[in-house]
Amino acid sequence: MRKKIVAGNWKMNKDFKDAEALLYDISDLLAEKNQQGMEVIVCPPAVFLELAVDIAYEEQFHVGAQNVNQNEYGAFTGEISAPMLKSLEVDYCLVGHSERRKYFSETDALLAEKILLLLKWEITPVFCCGEVLAQRKKREHFNIVKKQLSEAVFHLDKENFSRLVIAYEPVWAIGTGENATPEQAQEMHAFIRELIAKQYDRDIAEEISILYGGSCNSKNAVGIFSKPDVDGGLIGGASLEAEEFVKVVCSYPT
Ligand code: PEP
Image 1 (cartoon, rainbow, N blue to C red):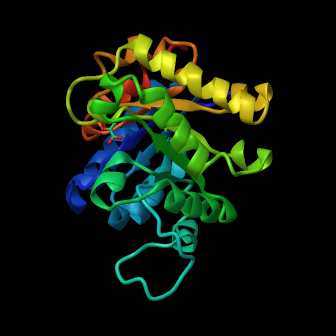
Image 2: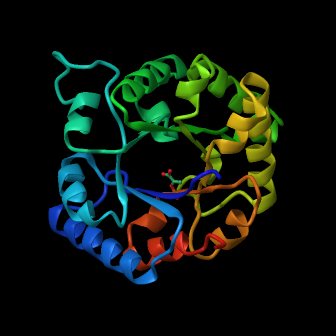
Image 3: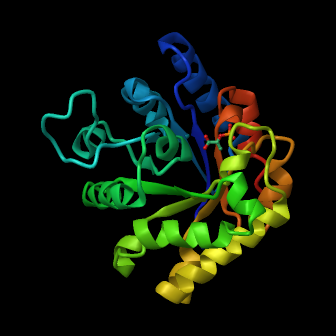
């Protein structure tokens, strides 16, 4: 049975006091709702990771980083390494979010390096892929996602590949209020699963969790999560408020 996951990406939001309050609220609400079988991940800015791990000690949620450097240590001022994340007991790390691809020029070759390092340090990479609007309009979206997977993760051996989580995030849906329809999400998730089956085997394809991300919120999550190849969501804006985020978590059919 593949894991059902809802992950919140706070991006560059919240100060210390607000972050602390939000983490406690999420923890309390999750304890109250007791949504069995769901893995909840919170990805706050790096400066709040330690706080998040402390507040998550009762295991209502896991903690993920939003980024990691591709080097293990050294003279890279301002950067954060996989061993540092590991020392804080961070379990997950986003890799290849479209904002990092766009604003920090991250390529799939670079993402491949980050993924290897995370796997070495036993932190689960959440690999983000997805097309921009112009590519979808030209019907190139399947090829774009295939290329991203080929260049960033398909070099991994079976054992390592099976440790990934994948997030399909059409860039045109991120932060725009325009989510993919459940059918569009299902179509791409099924395509990704088929690629994995071809590259590895059917068992691995069936075991990998593929999340949907892009303007997913408590109003549209039920429809998107009802699709058979959607194993949860990567949530940006709607993860910044506890009740809304936990409503999204509870949108998964139990
Ligand atoms: C994201 O940042 O990964 C994301 C999906 O953002 P939003 O939900 O705000 O579109």
